Image (cartoon, rainbow, N blue to C red; front, side, top):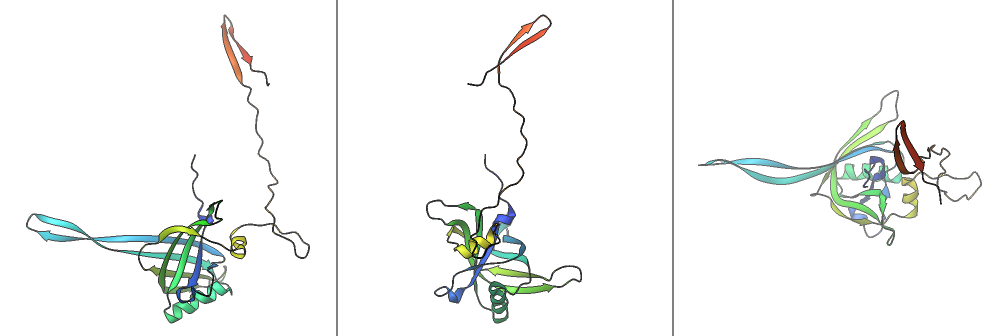
Length: 201
């Protein structure tokens, strides 16, 4: 049975477009949420037989919210916004990894930030709410994620010793299950029924 994809498994990675030859994409840290929107405005054209709908040009964007940090990714996004620079963006599905290539299912596109809202309320952490206007829809493919960003995207357990390697988390709770006996046959009787339970082999 197919399972639903959890939103927390889909994360954003960014890079300046002009740095493709020299810089690897980096994960957006402390992301709260993002929304990918793709819309096509439909117009109508008047004819002698009535109005006819016509398809307009599609427009796409990514609205996101994340906590303000001092990471390289945050500083790069702010720099790109202030200087009107194009950004490469990936939506990585960390729940779907190709076992042969080690790559993750992803969507890719480019665009410009048209806003960089900064919210600083007294009782919460400062958050950023930028919007990335895309050059067309995102395209699908498979993306490589290096070890550093892969670890940032996952919840790892680290031991207290120096130089400890990341370990898979250990689930401390084991769900309780009730063993249901397998019924081999049911024989009706005058005062009920006789149920024969199948013995374990």
